[in-house]
Image 1 (cartoon, one colour):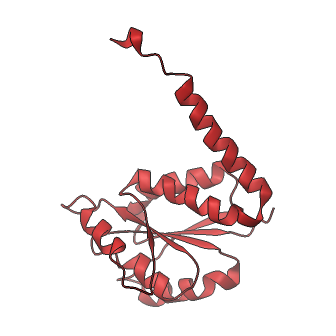
Image 2 (image 1 turned 90 degrees about the vertical axis):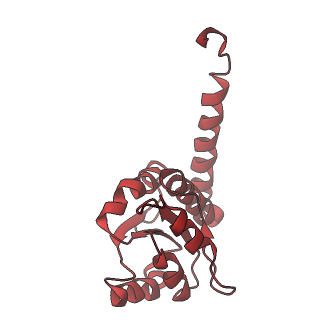
Length: 166
């Protein structure tokens, strides 16, 4: 397997890493090469455009873009690349991520962003979805993802009797 990143995880600020570390942890667990960068749509727009425009040429196949508030990062990155962009709303404002969710999910026709749940569940699912996307041509990744999912099933099946928990 290549050591070059297949998945890019980007976020508007370092504070978003608290949520997005779950995506990075899962990609590491699944042995999916990835990179993690701060790319702000509002404070570093030129860097954002450069990142989006260069990602495909650098071997990135999926971008996970996290943003809170107005959540422009996922949509603006999607506008600059044909790579799949997965948006993760960050609960960064008084609206607890609902504002970011609505911003990301309401992309105009022609500029798609796959939108995940708010916060850590969305970050985890973005990593799993990114893995499924890059695993399409990588049987070893498909098997690791299959094993990861089977382990979650076995965890639940191993803890189905709650009779003594009353």
